[in-house]
Length: 96
Length: 96
Image (cartoon, rainbow over all chains, first blue to last red; front, side, top):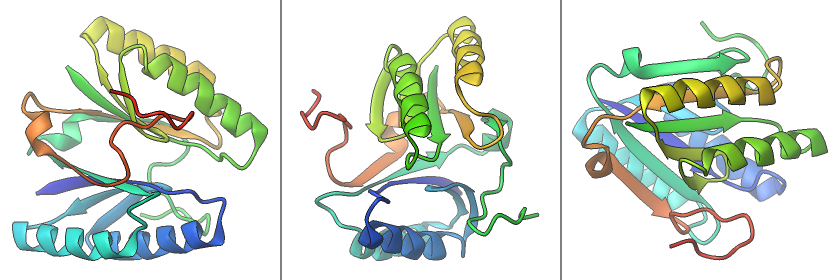
């Protein structure tokens, strides 16, 4: 199933940027980074539970938040994108 | 229909922060801000087209991106949240 994961973190601090890097590293194992802190991950139920558990331990629960949206089967038809490229790459190289 | 809007913008610049404020102001007319740059908006098709058009003019298409996810009818059952409070308020007061 496709799970959209959005991560709210303060990236003005080195600790926040470090947490974002860690969360991104986990998420891209299962999908792609479509914005700086938005990930589309293809997961089975066991992977989903496992990923949530690991992310939960990485973030600062007092300042950060994670949201998980289970997208329906036709999710690709129901996404629109405006602006700069759809695949986010912090190194500035287009991911294909 | 419920539309999830995610906005990727560089908030280290005053211009980026200004654009985020403008986008947020538009989006909260139709729903709530659940993270710093994530909005859940209840829109009919005409409102959706109109909002997209207005947001498109607000953002910097070369650096920013907007993604729109049309969530299904049972979307509330398919959202999970971890971490700090679910309603984001830049002034730090809990929205209810």
